[in-house]
Length: 302
Ligand SMILES: [Zn+2]
Image (spheres, protein in one colour):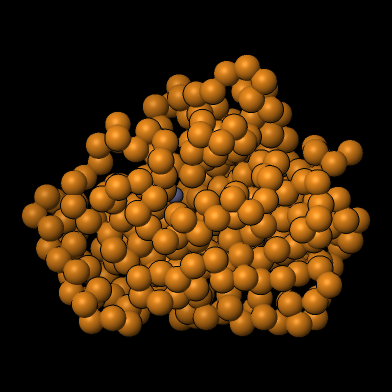
């Protein structure tokens, strides 16, 4: 898979799908990254629908296999689930962090702007000093999670941001950025929530074959989040883990939507191995997630 530039593949694939399904699929660029790539949203179904589900994947660069999953789910929905799309509108960001994916796939050679390549080189030097980076540069880039500015996007959301410590300078992971929502990738996700009343959100990460839920809310919202987590667990076969009890880091996408917006949200950790995952894991990830979207539709719309 490393031979194919996944970002270019995604753009082409979505174009083809829109061409053959103009009634049911629209694609919109929500924002542009520091290195000039588009953050694409695929809108599947009618925007007039009562139910809007946000799916976002690959916010961590090296977890790009989830972009393949999201695209295959779009294809499957277009092929087999006509009814599904009459009830629910899916807002899918298959690749929330395209620059990070490019870095993980190609290293800094994949980055277009010389200035950004220089800053990334500095990240490597800094991470070497703190013992975080390995001597093997190729491995270091492969394991990259942040965006091209060295910000860990899933620590850049405005929920528990102040409390999250992490690291204080741009890095491969765990730098939360200069201020909450400083990154266009994060604002792209938030812009979907500004435009549509979201019923729930699901974030695809890797790995662990678990589902994180329970971000620290109570009452009715906790019940709704539990129902969502149970549904996802039943379909995927993944175990449910309480994010609070597991002391997961804050300032993530699901934390934000639950705690700041009152929208039930879960995080799915697909796969068992180290990221980037081996292509050999894909078939089992696909079979775990294949019927997820219809199950979400049944949860809300019936
Ligand atoms: Zn992740």
